[in-house]
Structure formats: structure tokens, C-alpha cells
Amino acid sequence: MPLRLFSFSMFIGLGAVLGHVYLYRRLVRPLVRARAARLVAMLLLGAMTVLLGFRRTLLDAIPGAFEGMVTVAMYTWMGTALCLVIVLGALDLVRGGLALTRLARRRARPPLPSPAPEARVSQPAEAPVDEERRRFLGRALAGGAALAGSGLATYGNWRAFAPPVVTELAVRIPKLPRSLDGLTIVQLTDIHVGHFIQRRFMDELVRQTNALRPDLVAITGDLVDGDVPTLGNSVAALRALRSRFGSFFVTGNHDYYSGDEEWTAFLQTLDIQVLRNRHVRIGDAGGSFDLVGVDDWSGWRRRGTKGYDLDLALAGREPERASVLLAHQPANFKVAAERGVDLQISGHTHGGQLLPMTLLIGLAWEHSAGLYRQGDSHIYVSRGCGFWGPPMRVGSPPELVKLVLTT
Figure 1 (tube, helix red, strand yellow):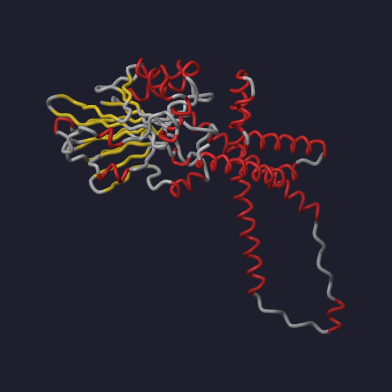
Figure 2 (cartoon, rainbow, N blue to C red; figure 1 turned 180 degrees about the vertical axis):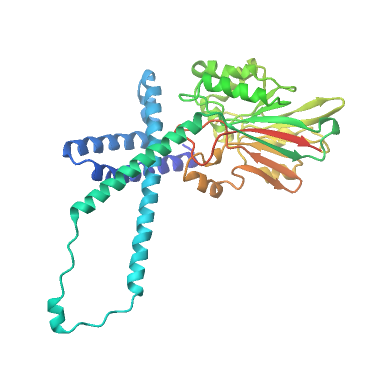
């Protein structure tokens, strides 16, 4: 197992353990009084911890007929549990901040003079803590957090399946021929067709794409999470894409997991051109540019498969011509810019997809979401059209990108 994948699995496993322990202590214990019910909740949380921590091994072990059902339940709970932890954590931070503020105020007060001995005797004792009131407040806060967390998960689920937000912006490419000024590229990326996203979602996505009247459609990887026999009918919706210069595809890391050779062969039957470390000329004698496509950056790690090869993709290209690079991951952009690439179109990051990852994704990727510039070159990183893992998006809505190239 590659080190990065192993580290990610360890992170998920540790997060599952800590998250479920936290949920039991902060949600189950205050709300559930009966010992039998607490035991059932503990067993269920323990089972989900094991399932999330060893999901790959367990999913491979169970019969195929149950894999889809278990996957849907597992990832739905993962997202719901994360939303509950976020709300409870925010609540605890507020409570902790208020407690620290009260403590600081007490310490800032000047000390009171010591009373006379006879006054000490007559002073009333401090009122005892009302345990029943404390338990009531604890249950009320836990119940409110449960409702808020469930509401956040419900919103995230709606946002994930709702039509993507259309992001339209212009990118200036001085080397672009004047005859192609205003050419539009619509980017589809990170759809992750699988147990959640299927034909109905794809039909709507294709309809929305065609409504933008693109000159070219770029599908920049992570199209699927599964094999051709299982998902072929859903992906076949892409046959209905309509554009002036056609549709083009480059592989993402999940396409490698799902069988890159089989999927690229299938996509070609849908009239989608696959660019595996090569470039093609877009346009005609009146004006054209080079569309360059590379395999996924991590593809070389899989023995016996192709991988990212920018040199091969650019081989034989005339440097003075305008060029657009399709690359799934926003990696190696600075090198691509140095090689004369005018625009790189990528995805992969999902913009974090869910809190708190939406706040942390910038630590992992220099170009995490949106448009960036390096000299005269640009890169656009899409948040993606679909989702992976939990069927939710919070803080990073899906997007359908329309790039308008100008001279």
C-alpha cells in the first residue's frame, strides 16, 4: 500500500475511534438513561468504528450483493457523525471560552478584606450545586446539538445531490488566435459515479452542461468508483454531450482504482477522446490551439500502468502555439508553466468537500480551489461536480465550470 494511502487510512481509523468515543460521552450518555439502551448504542458505535477503520478489507470480504448497501450506510453515517462532532465541538469550544472568561474575571478582581472572626461565623455557606439542574442543562445542550448536527447533515446531503453551481470566468491567453477569441470550455470533474451517483444524476449533469453551449467539454478525471459492467449504463449518459469540438477525458486516481484501461476503452465508444500523455490540435486552418492531456499524477505508482508524463504529452508541439493542459491533480503546475502551458485545468481537491477539511485543504495543496496565476500562465482548480465518501457537501458546493478563453 502506498505510504500516502496508508497514512490516509490511519487518519480515518484514528478519527473514527476518537469521534465515536466523543459522541458517546457527549451525546449518548447525557440523552440515554437506560443501561440497556446505552449498551446498544455503544455496540453500534463500536461496529461503525471497526467498519470505518477497516472498510477496505471488510468491503472486499462481504458478498457483492451487500456491498452497495453497506457502503451507503457506512458513508452516510460517516458524514452524519462528522456533522454531529462539528456541532458538539463548536458548542464545547464556546462553553470552554465562556468558562475561561469567567475565570479570568474572577482573578482580575481585587481581593476582599478578611472579615472579623465573628463575621466569619455568621456568613452563610455557599449554595450547593444543583445536580438535577446540571443534568437537565446537559441533556438540553446535547439534544440541541443532535438536532443541529442532523440538520447540518441534511443540508449537506441536499447540497451534494443538487445541481452544481455554475462558475463562469474569462481567462486571457495572449497566444490564442483571434478567430478563437471567446471559445468556451466546460469542465466536468470528480463526479465519482458509484453507489450514490448514478444515471439520473448524470442525465441532469449532461443537460446542464449542454445548456451552457460549450465549444469543448473537458472531463478531468475521477469519473467513476467502480467497474464498467456495474456503472457503464450511468456513464453512458455522457454520450449525449454536445459541443463544437467534442469531449475529452484524462484519468484521475480513482479511475486507476476502477480500471483505467477498461474505462478509457469504454469512453471512446461514447465518442469521448481520451488524452493519455498526448496532445491534439483544436480548431481549423483559420486558427487553432493545442489541447494537452496527461495521466493522473499518482498513476505511475501503480505497477504496469501509465503515469503522468508531461514531456511525452508535449513532444512535437510548437512552443509558440497556445496550449491548454488537462491534468486531474493540481500538481506540477509551475513546471507546466515553465514549459509554456497557458492554462491548466484540474480538480481532485473537491475544495475540501466538508468542514473542517474545507478550512484545511489549503495546507495540503498550494492550488486548492479557484483560479491562480504563475507568470503568464493560469490554473483553474474545480471543486468538482460530485463527491466522494460521505454523500454530503458543507462549505464547498459542487460546481460546473465554464471557462471563456480570450486573447
